[in-house]
Length: 297
Image (cartoon, rainbow, N blue to C red):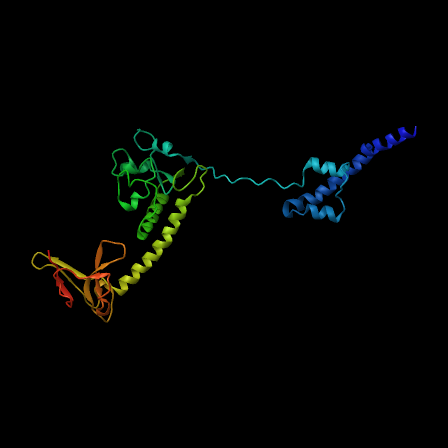
C-alpha cells in the first residue's frame, strides 16, 4: 500500500489537475501579454523572466514546457536578403542580341543588363552598334577596340582617364533604358553579388578623379598653344600671355608635352626654367628660343 501511495503522488506531480493547469495557463497568458511586446521590441524576455523568477530548471515544470512549445521568446532566424533581380548567364543574354525579330534587345554594361529595344536603330541587327547587343563589352566603350579581343567585360588595366568615360556611359544607360537584371561574369556572381570587377571599377574612378585633377593643374602650369592654319602661311603655333585661356605674366615657349605612359602629345607653352624637363620635346624645324613657329609639313 505504501508503494502504491508513493506512485500516486509521483503521478499527481507529473499530471496536475485541471484547476492547477488552468492556473498555470493563466500565468502564461498574462506573462505573454506583458513580455511579448517587450521581446519583440527589445529582446528582454530573459531579463523579465529572471526578475520575476519565472524560469525553471525543472523539466517537468508546466510553465517551462508551455513556453518551449509555444516558442514565443525565440528570436526569428535571420532571412537572407533577396533582391528578386534576374541573373542572366552569358548564354541567356545572347538570345536577346536583336537577331530574332520581335524579341527584346538586351545588352550588359558593367554587369547590369538593360533593355535597349527602344534604341533598335543603334543596337538592332542593322544598327551601327549591334556588336554591343547580347553581351557585356564594357571595355570596348572606352578602348574603341571593336573586335573579339576588345568586346569583353574585363576592364582591368585601362588608362586612368578612361574610367571616367565608363562612368559617362553608366549614366546614359541608367537614364535612358530599363534595368532588367544582372549578368553573371566579371562584375557579378550567379547570385548577383559583386565580384572583383566592381572593386576595380570603383578604384578606377578614384584614379580617374586624381588624373583629372592633375590634368587641370597641368593646363594651368603649362597652358595650350595658340594655333592657326591657312594655305598661304601653313600651320603656325605660338605662345602669348593668354594662350590656352590662361592669363599670366609670362609667355613661354611652344613644346610637345608628353604625359608619362602616353605616345600622344599636346602643344604646351613652357616657362624657360622648365624647358629641360624630359616631358617636353621641341617641334621639328622650330628654333629653341622662338615663341612662334611654323610647323614643318
